Image (cartoon, rainbow, N blue to C red; front, side, top):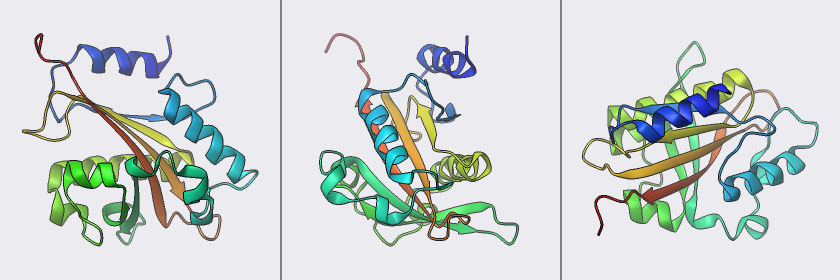
Length: 180
């Protein structure tokens, strides 16, 4: 059993707590949602032999079906180069309706520490692994529970070496509670 399958089993069996958040490197053969698998394939084809995708690979015409669930974040790094916060640069309509419009705002200003920690964790994971990553949870944040959250991060780079943005695709599904 892969570590992802272990994490997936833990996620499926855990209670809906916002502090349960798992980050998994996106590798070939990883079993993920169909829409995310299509994006992984599309972004890999656009990236070619470059280490990272660039912002120009995020073309609205080729991603029109996914635009409502897309976010672009610009990382804020400390002197050591670790992501410590991020600024919203673009929010799709579905993401804006879920969280509210936050373009131009920092995660820490808009969502607080809990979401900021998640964003930094997955962003730093992408930078360290030099690969896309998937974040998984059963809650958006405390008080916003009973959902299945899958967040797919693609690190973007202008120069092919330094990650300067993240292209994110989010899937938030309401989890069933009872028989409603």
